[in-house]
Length: 193
Image (cartoon, rainbow, N blue to C red):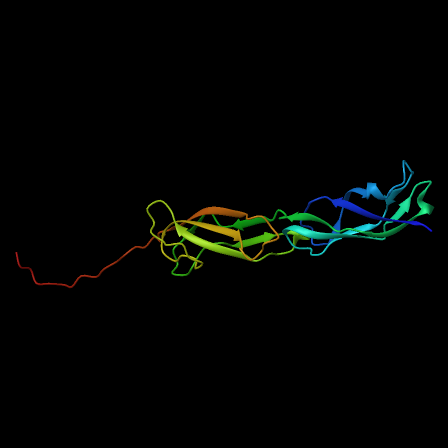
């Protein structure tokens, strides 16, 4: 009968891409199961991570592998051991836009657009934070400021988006004081010297 032989493989780490496909870096057979210097090797198959999300030491399986070589017909592949590999965070792109300056109008003023985009330009969860700069006192807040002063707005990747590396973009802007002019009326009076 055919001699039983088992296989193993190693898989490459990869950057998060939303899928489970894995790349096999090496395939091997248990050397003790090979008779002499028989020409037999592990070939083919497709590898997949158990999860598509970022993590360390994720189980990777190799399905559909077979034996190759001139002596392959003398062996029975009993199985291929799993491997482990990492999926590391992908890069996201943060962007925030503001007018360079605004004029006080009593309303909140700030970002005209903000986004954090991941793979295929998918919009990711984000945080938008405003804070005062220079002499302007404005504690970090998600609420855009209304008063005249110097500010900074920052858009950042939300901490819940664990498949992406932290990223942010900031812009400075100013809400200028509104020009105002006054007038008055005076009462007539009797000359009093």
